[in-house]
Image (cartoon, rainbow, N blue to C red):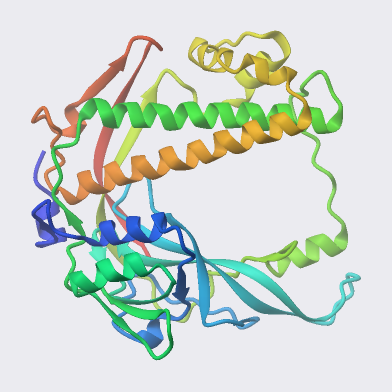
Amino acid sequence: MTDTGKAFYEKLIYDRSRYSVWSLVKDLRNSKKDIQIYTDPELIGKYKRISRKTKDGSTTVLTKWAKLIGVTGNRTRANLNLRVMSKVNVEVPENEHGVEAGIRELEAIRSFSLVADGKLNLHEIGIKTKDTKLIGKLKRLGIVQPLLLNDEYLLDLEGLPVSTKKAAISGYQLGKSELQVRKSEIICTYLRRLLWMKEKGLTVLPRKLDEPEKTESELYLESLGIYGNYYYPDHTKTSELERTYLTTEVIGKVNGIPKDLIPNIWRFVNTGSCKNKVIEKILSEHKGAKDLDLPELQRELGCQEFGLKVRKDYLRELKYRLIMGKTLVLDNHKYIEDTKINFPEYGISVEWCVKETEIKV
């Protein structure tokens, strides 16, 4: 395997003691106080957009600040995004579908790309917070300055490395993380099916879930991007030309678990067994969920979905560090694509492929 990262990532990795963009994101995510992000980073400047800019003429952001609700990324690439909740005005035009025309105040989820495939994408961000401990730390690092009003600050990311060197990543740790994410996905899918059964008052799970038919009004609103109190803008409209670039992907595969979980879950709910013995072993540890009442089952599903989110975040962090390490070598000095981790307790293995992928933007 060649060191494909050197030409693309430049000198973005520094010694392990340095504070990095990843460190900042973790501090923002773990803050005990609300963090708000300025909603138009291009007004601040130094926003080196990699993707094409899209426009959605039917919305107007009502507030300049939006609440930080999470950090997202990609489980195979070195991406890092801030996810925020914004308030927007959406205009519903005159129509023949029984929907009242006019302006609706809705909420929309937006993402700001800090790091896109290993490259710093947003060099300055505005934040608003009462977390004096966090701001004090950032002041000592020299990366924050106050804006006009109290609790409003400008963060300068340009002097920060995108990632810092860590101790070599354990192949077993990475394999276990891939497995835990897959297990959590299986458990959550199983609990969602049980919850659907409880809500319908059924004792047998049908092969296909009955979805309520949508009204003409609902279908029309969805065509505008309106789903209940949320708005999902159309990101396909742009006047910019399409362009491409190459990036590195690390794709994990858990051998022994099929992609389509539903047939095995259907069989397990109705008979207590599966054709796939790995899924059966995983679900057997949660067999008692079938006897929970509705509120207990809802709580259990909530806990499992939160656990799945935490495990996905951790896997993203490991992949991010691995890709930004350029050489994709694990702690046993083996290249990741030559590594296979066995988990005999489940009778499965985890392995990876590394490839250069063309990204269209």
